[in-house]
Amino acid sequence: MLGHTISKSFAERDQKHLWHPLTQHKLHATTLPIVKAKGAILHDEHGKEYIDGIASWYTAMYGHCNEHIIERVGRQMQQLDQVVFSGFTHPPAIELSEALVNILPDNQQKLFFSDNGSTAVEVGIKMALQYHFNKGHKKNVLLAFEDGFHGDTFGAMSVSGLSVYNGPFENFFLEVERIPVPNGTNTGEIQKTLENLLREKEAAAFVYEPLVQGAAAMKMHDAKGLDTILALLKKHEVLLVADEVMTGFGKTGTHFASDQVETKPDIICLSKALTAGLVPMGLTTCTEEVYGAFLSDDIAKGFFHGHTYSANPLACTAALAGIELLQSEEIQKNIANIMQWHQKFADEMRPHPKVKNVRHLGVIFALDLNVETQRYGNLRNKLFKHFMKEGVFLRPLGNTIYILPPYIISREQMEKIYASIRSAIALFQF
Ligand SMILES: *Cc1c(COP(=O)(O)O)cnc(C)c1O
Image 1 (cartoon, rainbow, N blue to C red):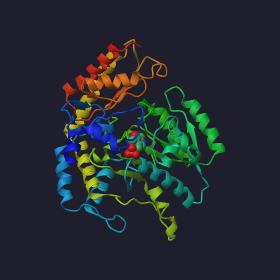
Image 2 (image 1 turned 120 degrees about the vertical axis):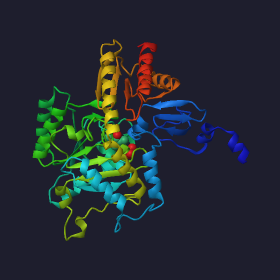
Image 3 (image 1 turned 135 degrees about the horizontal axis):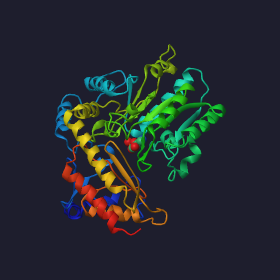
Image 4 (image 1 turned 60 degrees about the horizontal axis):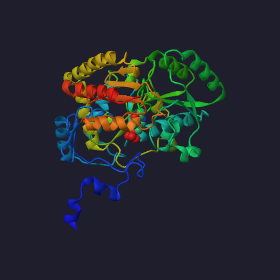
């Protein structure tokens, strides 16, 4: 029996019991077994190597199996593995709070732990709704951008505008009003839309991805337009909930995307690169003002939300080690280098007749192919296969090809990604 199991490949054994996320298993028959990862490289079960051009969904920014992070977490593992965070505390959580508050926008003072990006947003929404409830305000509507993505739990799904797959659940959503993203020319219109909305609806909070909407194929916003919207909302006592799950920890060239916008959020949601790609964790941070609304002699005004693994000491240690790396001269220099390489590649791609809308911010690079995706529905899969054959892991979205490499990627590896994009564009007719 055991011999029989071993003689089958991982790919075959996978199919027997595993149900993968975001997958229609009838149409998508196979999954690729990855058995090892180091630095910017993924290794499959046959020994083929792939450059991880999206840092495994923007998590492993300091490289896979990073020695510094593994060493720190390994030591913590022998000291304290897990303890209840309700009534207890521990050094990794305390040290993380100090290190993170030190790099977050100045107004962020309190940290609330959860398990992933969706729960970080869920907590942000509940925090905002209860803030108003505790203050006796009647505010029950949430605002969000068109095409936003905030996760797959109910609150997070409700504020997400990319609702193609949310059909079965839409009747159960929170009440959300959507506004267009600022593109540099529509700020005045958005302002008017918002002013009308705020007259009709009792808006509690605005949930937004600052500057870059990841799942909307790296759609980038006009920072000034975003600031105008945020300032207007702040004036109307709408809490600003910045979802920095994707943009956080250096990806936009600053520690947080909110650093590039004058009006600061009241609440920030963090995950993904927070723990440097090692283990899952979510964090929701807020101002003293938000926290203060929960302080009361009435126990029910407290925030009764919690997860079993809240502030897991190993996850906190991974986050601390990640922040140390983020602040290192070496990583900051790498980020600056990648930004320069992207700039050059963008200049090269912009005039290409098969390319439109080249954009980049920090280490995020994206271009749209000059084609209607509805008519060429399988182009995305062809591109994906082409990149994988070339040993490059990228996940094109519709007609968008984007790169979000780990900071430790070498010049040579980055050139290989650019070359595979050039060859893909040359190869396919559209
Ligand atoms: C990935 C992502 C989420 C959801 O995080 P999960 O850990 O996958 O639940 C939420 N918001 C943004 C902006 C994201 O990119």
